[in-house]
Length: 155
Image 1 (cartoon, helix red, strand yellow):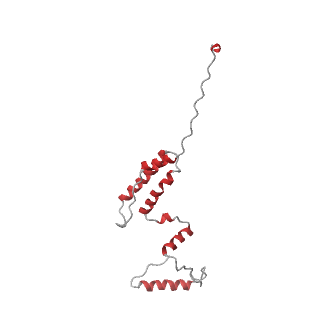
Image 2 (cartoon, one colour):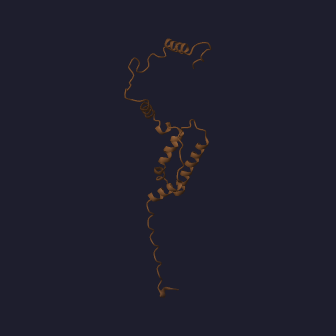
Image 3 (cartoon, one colour):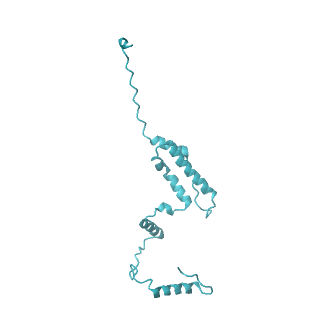
């Protein structure tokens, strides 16, 4: 744990002092890739680097989005998600849960006035999409006719 910067010492001087002390302790010796040039692609942007780093670390890139864009992306993925649900009630519950989270997002103050504002999901359209993609129910076989008893066996 590093100490706090003492008052009266410039920030640059304090940082240089911390680096010098770490070098004297040997904190920088024996590091992997020590003395080798950095592997930098001149064509790679900071965005490309961040995506590659996230993939190496196993982080979903959708988790890196700001909340408004994350909700928009989720709304765009709702039609595919509802196809995996088993009932109309589950579809409605999923859409209503999403809409509740969007309304909660609307109530929170935003970091910027330019922050993206997600829209609500159309519950009825999602239910209609789910219904249209369901396979038709199997035709029920008519019940067998009851066997009629012969008049002479009635008793």
